[in-house]
Image (tube, rainbow, N blue to C red; front, side, top):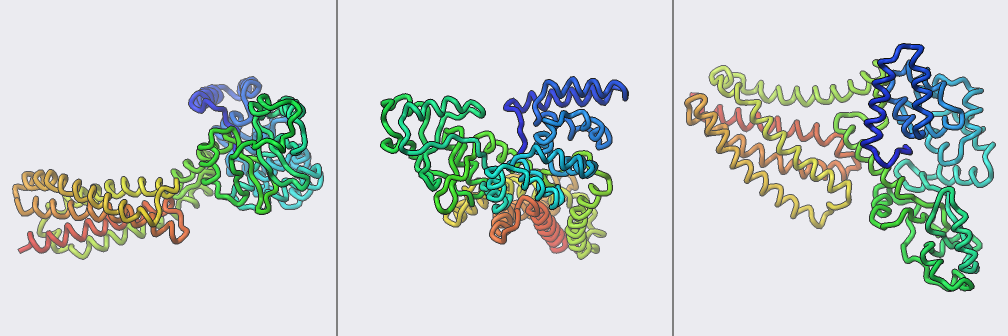
Length: 456
């Protein structure tokens, strides 16, 4: 997972400036400029900087990243950008690189590495690291058990408060303000904060305290649910246990925020058929192949809309005004439906929408669609009537707009809900389906009414 600094806006500005200076620099000047830059920035920022460079330049600058930082930089990069570097590294170099990898980093890299190199890296790990990697491998990409942090302070329930406080204070790398109590079998018993330890009598045993009442998360928990739990807890981290109650690690607030950002980026990219791991400078052939599928899908939907228009060819020949006004009908329906679609997809992603409140939301959105439909039907109908000096044309336009906006609101609710129930990502295909519905309904209504009212 990407290790980004907290001030993301400043980071983007700094990276943008560095990229501009690198692109303006001549060949011999680029190396020293990049070397000076990476001495002052973190691995996450180095990853962003490398991703911002064309592949040839990226590979040249990769050679300047210090061996100690290379693993962290690779982990922080998007999958496609990382793969572009890994493909160029000889096996001996990869073997040496993976000799410095821990369980958490290897889990991020495993999909981009040959199985033999992964097995070799695991065999050279310590027993704990090997155990953590094997545990993480049991979980899928959308389960929190795959991404646990294992840097935590474990304490037995019999330890005295003064010794527990001393142990927590010594854990400065990374700093933690909570310790986790486990029994002899590693089962989670509770968590205690530094503030609580300071307030306890020095000789009191931890097992005699109530500790924190925060419930642990389950390793099989969905990423979205787990990250929301951390964000709402008010704590820097939450413990995570397996189905038998054994403490497996923790999920930190930093990781939760990062996962939330990645989920947002993923949904944003999915609306146009791409994914969050897409490399900005991926090869032309690879990029065209990915986008060709989406273009093909859109072509099919456009052909369907064109077929509907073709059924009213005679009407369009007689009433040219209909051809001029058609794009307005489709555009208004598309925008209205997209507003509802976006709202519903967000509700599904955040767990706010369920069977219990679906009917209420549908009624509300239909009300909004009907109100806006009538409002803009009047405005556009009047404009169309005045434009073509024909009251009947304005009336046809008004009715078509009202119907299409209302149908768009219904589709904006129904489409993502149906896709979600069929285990399909509504962010990926919802907009295409919605556009097809609003175009087909809009054209059919508008041209059908035109045939009935305007054609003699």
